[in-house]
Image (cartoon, rainbow, N blue to C red; front, top):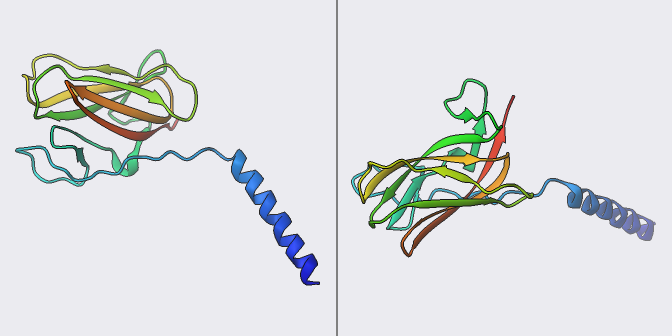
Length: 153
């Protein structure tokens, strides 16, 4: 009887393993490190490295729902404002890639007129839902984070 029981447990474990392999892969979202930009109040959403900062969405999820202030663009892309703070001068560039499936690269709108350092408003434009790695760059300084982008209809 113990042999039959062990075989049953092993068979159930194998079925569980196979079903886990076919499940949607997880998205290792970045958690805020609460590293606050200079001159800003401490906040639980801040994420930075001492030279470049942003504010991450709750639970690392960017959720687009009807009535939200984010935008679904005519091509179906999903656009959301993201603030950045810069302690180093130079142009900010932002790039991104989807980690869980093939997709066009992230686009970013980075308006001029914010000076060389301090706050910089941007819009991140995700071509699709999914798990996205985003990197902001200024000179030799990089800040990378991962967010899960979802659209509710």
